Image 1 (cartoon, rainbow, N blue to C red):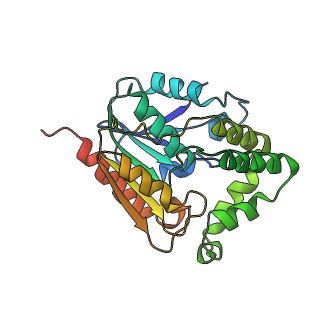
Image 2: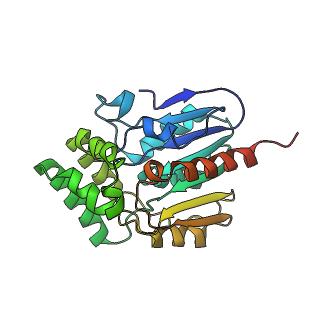
Length: 249
C-alpha cells in the first residue's frame, strides 16, 4: 500500500496528513500551488478506501518515514493528522524543517477521554448520525448554516463507519505527546478555532507552551473545519512555513 500521493516538483516538500474522517483531497486545498506536495491517503480513505488497514499508528508512522525518506519536508497536520505529525517529529527520523498544525489532537490523557472516543466508535458501528456529530462538535452555528458546510456533511456521510471506529480505537491506545515535545526544535505554527469543540483551544495552548519554537494563532468565531472556512489563512501560513524552510541562496 502506498500512502502518499505526490503532486508538483522541486523545493521543500509539504506533506499533509488528514484527520478522521476526512477526504485526502481537501488537504491539497491547504497547500499553495507551485511546489511539491504530498497528501497522505490513510487506509479507508481516498486511493486506499478499499484497504482494510493497518490502523496501528506506529505501523503507519514507519510507512510514512520510509516513503518520505531523507527529503526535506514541512509537515501539515489536521486534527488527528496533527497528532500523527507530532509523533513523526518526536521520533526524529525525518529531515523535518517545520510543521503547521491545524486544530491538532494530542492523544488521550485520561480514562474518561479514552472512554469517550471508544463510545464514539461504538456509536459509529451502531449507526449514530455522523452528520449531527460533525454539526455539533466541529462547526459553529454560523458555519453549520453556511452553504460550504454541505461538503463537510457529505464527507461525514461518506465515511466508512467500521473504518472510523477502528481508527478511533487505535487512537485511544496511543501515548499522548505532552511531556515529549522538548526535542522538536523546528518552527511550529498552530492554528485553532476559538470555538472548536472537537479539539479545543486548550490543547493547542498546551502544545504551544511545550514546543520550543511554536507560534499559536486562534481564529475568531471558528470551529474545527479551518480548511473549509478559512482556506486563505491556512494557505498563507503553510506557504510562509514552506518559504522559510527553503535554503538561502
